[in-house]
Length: 197
Ligand SMILES: Cc1cc2nc3c(=O)[nH]c(=O)nc-3n(C[C@H](O)[C@H](O)[C@H](O)COP(=O)(O)O)c2cc1C
Image (cartoon, rainbow, N blue to C red; front, side, top):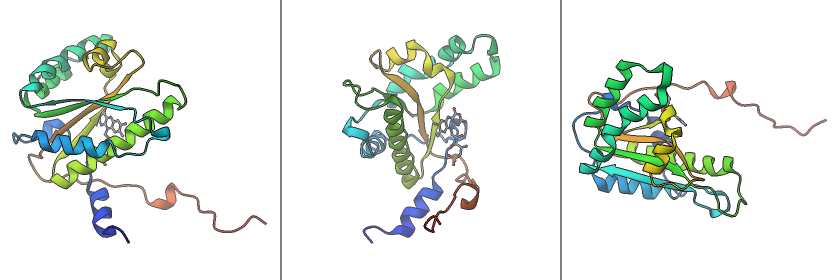
């Protein structure tokens, strides 16, 4: 055994999404965001393309993106616009202390499928989640429709073939650590443990 499997299993199962409305006032330090992002870059990557791109907003930098969340929502929502959601995003922008825009830039040579590039970024996000969990920080990967706005891609500094794959919020829980549940393995697994006859 190269690692303590019981600790690894506990960490994986303890990982939770925590909505920013449940974050406390406690600020997430830049060093923690940096570690989460560095760990993210150790995710598997087909062809070593390392397609993840991050735009990290911390400290006063949050003022650059916070006020934009509600505005982008308004642009993207169209007829589905909800004033309550707009206000929620206005408040969210003011209270979150760390937010990473998750980006993906596909392999320039086109050797690797875009699907694989996105899957690699998803693995990277899981590493961010796990790093957050170890710190007692709740992560929240959010993929609202506004992430598809060209304006958001440009804001995140991504090239034309890049994509915004979500916002990753980080914050300490105001109350206890959330609980969750999963379907038992037998619902999602078929075992094949015999040679075909
Ligand atoms: C690709 C992806 C996108 C997600 N986007 C959203 C989102 O837009 N809004 C949201 O409330 N949760 C989002 N989530 C978080 C899920 O709601 C959350 O993972 C799920 O409820 C299970 O909770 P847990 O992460 O605490 O185990 C997303 C998760 C993934 C993997």
